[in-house]
Image (tube, rainbow, N blue to C red):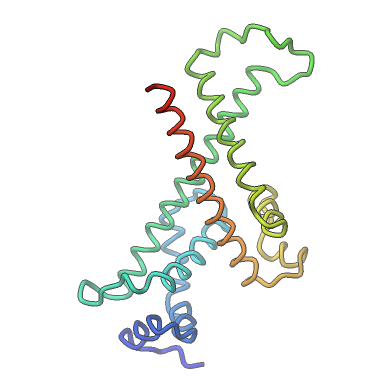
Length: 215
């Protein structure tokens, strides 16, 4: 296949939903964008996080090419900026996830997780009211994530567990499930979007309930 498309032909092909244009775009920018995304992540997350950011970038370009204005800059600049925002968003997500697990683990260690703990036992003095409130909030968010996961199709839920809980590589998931890389990437992208939507909906409901309580 001929990949050396001029920018104007590449843009036109993407607008017209020509799969060959997407292949040419990926061939031209995949190595450059993967390197740039790793720089933005700056060591946060795993190599798979960088790989998924690159996949998300090309999906976003395919879906959002209508927002690109050739009069305002080059296609390369626009793709690079989309990659930057996607990588920064992933970096924040990974850092929040790491902080949540660290905070939760610390709180459970301080409170004790043994079955013989008395239900009305006074918590250790080191746990202030603010820290207790923070632990409860973290647990509430984990419960929201569990509820959101139950909304996924069984196969998508399995892929999410394998990728993000077991930290399995895409290649390992391919061997385990028999799915192609493209099928796994597509399902994981769709699952992440569905999880984000479900969590945002739950967050809006939580904020609304808090406002009603304070009214």
